[in-house]
Image 1 (cartoon, rainbow, N blue to C red):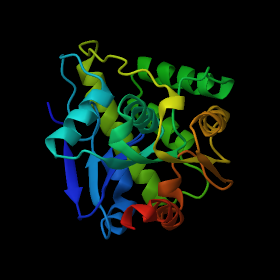
Image 2 (cartoon, rainbow, N blue to C red):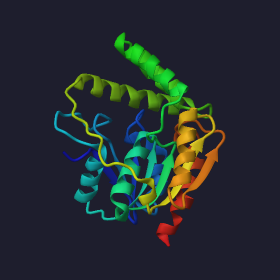
Image 3 (cartoon, one colour):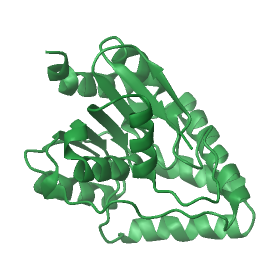
Image 4 (cartoon, rainbow, N blue to C red):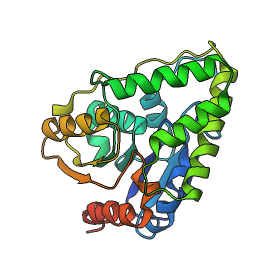
Length: 251
């Protein structure tokens, strides 16, 4: 199965990978600007947006690799958020020649969860077990958007997260997701920008520090105002940050 996706613009390819609280629509504020100079590829991972969950075995990195192959892309830059960041790291580690640049916005990675993440997980599980999908959705909106987010951003995240819950809960236990490639940070050769949010959960700030310290040559930008989804909180500022970092692709 090829992931649901869209392609906009022309030039060096940029792949956008969404957070686990979202789908490809989270990149609406960045797509047009990036497409002025790049071939912008957005996709919905399985169980998000327009990509269904099926019973066949899969892993997200393998799915994305297959999508890029189907599009004839042999080298891409990747801009990824949260859970999408983990997929991007898998791709850049397993296939270093595939990924030229990485921009990681509050990326996920396998560090031990902090109390704040554990507390969130317990609250979400309790709401879903009680059948309160609306309550679980609102918990996610409140947790993952920082104080700079406006009403439109909150409504978009609400819509995307509710869609993900509907698809994933309908699939039940009939899901065969595999872990995918192991991540060796030292093997990553992509030019990497790690972005962290000062208003995000401490778990993701710790991950950013770890990634910046272990990916060769990585740069780390800390946005004091940002929550977990800075591209939706201050879209223009994050668009400029990403565009500037990718400018060398246009050289």
